[in-house]
Every structure is written in C-alpha cells, then in structure tokens.
Image 1 (cartoon, rainbow, N blue to C red):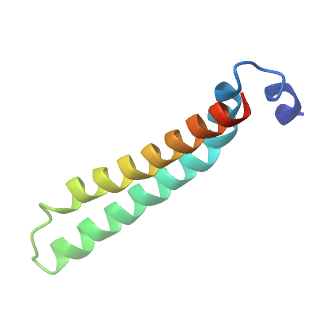
Image 2 (spheres, rainbow, N blue to C red; image 1 turned 135 degrees about the vertical axis):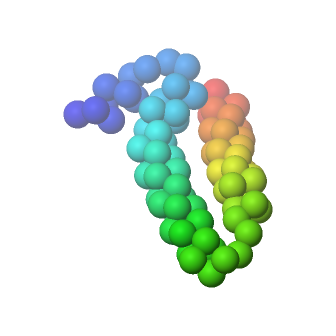
Length: 79
C-alpha cells in the first residue's frame, strides 16, 4: 500500500529517498550499536577510544554518499 502511494510521487528522487529511508535508518542504528559495543570493549581493555567516533562518522558518511550518488544517477538515467 505504502509503496504504491510513494511510486506516484514526482520527482522520482523523492520516491528513492522515501523507499530507502528504512534501510538507511536500520543501518545507522546497527552501526551505532556496534560503536557502543566497541567503546565498551575498548574501555574494558583500557585502550583509547579516540579514533572510534571519527571512523564511525566517516563510514556513515561514505554509505550515505554512495546512496545519494546512486539515487541521483538513477533519477538522471531514467528521467
């Protein structure tokens, strides 16, 4: 039901954003959980956690940039 309603929206890039949002939200939540676990693990081992958050932000930024590039490319090729 939701997908059919979304497919009627124009421009097509809005369709991509709305349909991909749940998977990106899941990925980000899972990555935050992994970051939380890594911080606890590193702190338990008395290892510095200074590089974890910047690495996390870089990974998330790369995934979102790839997703945006794919959506943009698809909308340009089909539009």
